[in-house]
Image 1 (cartoon, rainbow, N blue to C red):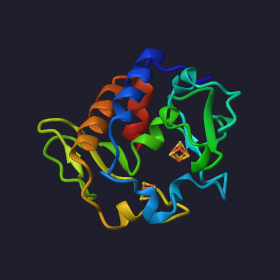
Image 2 (cartoon, protein in one colour):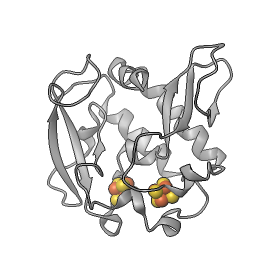
Image 3 (cartoon, helix red, strand yellow):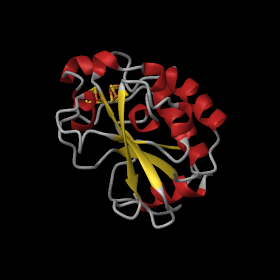
Image 4 (tube, rainbow, N blue to C red):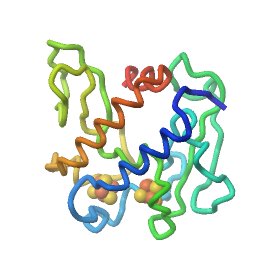
Length: 183
Ligand code: SF4
Ligand code: SF4
């Protein structure tokens, strides 16, 4: 398994922090039928765990289906060597919210690094002054439509701050920084 520097307790603390926030102050799954939780196409509807994030999960827990993907066969940063966990959810009705992976918790945003003085060709949703880290909308091709992204919704300030804090911490891990840098 790929080994990062982020420790189990750090992931636990991150989960606790993100447990307190949601992208908008209501259940956005009610406007789209929880589109991002559905597993109709398991190859395109899974979530990658960050290096070491698997340590706080129990693979016998049936709400997630696990796969290991080799960094030689899939498109990961060149510094990643080994296997990466890829999980599929059984569906929103089975979700164990307190164990949602980081990739789920920080959606629909993604972290990007923007050097000082540069104007990126994508919208910055949140950024702290003087920091290269910024949050923008997730722009991967998705097999569903997220109304928050489509409408560039105004996200909850507490969610923005917590998500930013989390990524600021996570990119201290060189492997995670490489992932964010790659975009
Ligand atoms: S697809 Fe977007 S609006 Fe729908 S549940 Fe997921 S984050 Fe919320
Ligand atoms: S972890 Fe839960 S909220 Fe996140 S995609 Fe899976 S079912 Fe949906």
